[in-house]
Every structure is written in structure tokens, then in C-alpha cells.
Image (cartoon, rainbow, N blue to C red):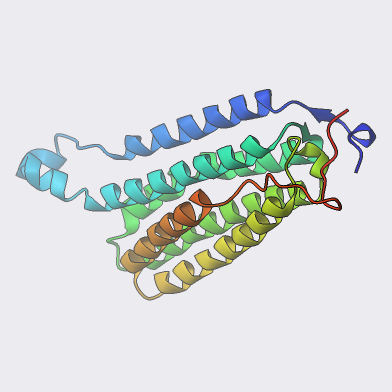
Length: 220
């Protein structure tokens, strides 16, 4: 599709907004790590030890947001331009990223509650599904719009990332299923999924080789 047929812009402002949202979201996670004087009445070390659900939720969420930031950078390292649809897809992603501290707090507060622990872990997994869906939408859009890519890049890598994002989104349903049995195990699954996709995406090529039929048009 020609870039002249729709509104396009450079990536700078989108990246700046995105980095700001990621930074704020990842900083807000630490606000759940607090000990009051009342908590410390039985001894500070004991109170700090009782915060293990908060530590666990913080670690998983920090890794989740951090990996999302790395993958977001991978998207924009390929792009020369963005269009309005991609901007909206990016906003959808940022909306979910900024929401992550809330389910993190829910998990930290209720993971030891026999009645609500499963619901808390399943809710957390649902946010992982939403993050995967947002990334899938972004990669899907890019895979159909070669003209947004930097000169010399094809959309083959975007297509692979689209499939991988879709697989990642579906994988979170495994964690949700595990959460119905063991909430703690579900958090381990969520963390393992993030690590897996971080490792696999680190070796993703940029597809710098152009074929005759795959050549991406340069921006006018």
C-alpha cells in the first residue's frame, strides 16, 4: 500500500511516549513493596519475609514489562514511519502496560488467600493475554504494510513475529489453566513464558536481504 494513501508520520513521538509509559509502569511496581510499623511489630525481618508474594509479583511483572519494552524496541528498530492505525495499536499496548501494576498488586495481596488466590492468578494471566493480543495486532499491521519499514527490510520478519506473538498470547491460557489448580505455579509459568519469548526474540533476524518480489518500497 502506498504511503500517500493514508496519514503517516515519523516514529520519534510514538517512541518517546511509549518509553515514558514503560518507565512509569515499571516504576509503579515497587510501590507495592512497603512495610508499616504495625507490620514490623513482630520483628522487621519477619515482616520483610512475609512480603514474599509482593517480591514474586514484582519480579514477574518487572520481567514482563522489561521484555515488552525490549520487544517494542525491536518493532521500532524496523520502522521508518508509522501510520494512524499503528499509532492506535500502540496506544492499546500502552494502555495494557500501564495497567500491569494493578494486577500485580492484586496478586501480591491475594496469592495467599485460599478463597481468592486462583482468581487473582487467573486475572493476572488475562492481562498477559491482553499484552500478547496488542503485540499481535501491531505485528499483524506491520506485516501487511511494507512501506512502514526501513529501506532494505522485508515484512518476512514481521510475519514471523506476528505468528510468535499470537503463540505467546495463546500460551498465557496455559498459565490461566494452571492458576485454576495452583496460583503459585501459574506465576512460575508466566515468568517462564516471558523468559522463553525473550530468548527466542533475541535471535530474531532483521531480514536485511531483499528478494525481487519482496522488495519493500521506500517512503516518498
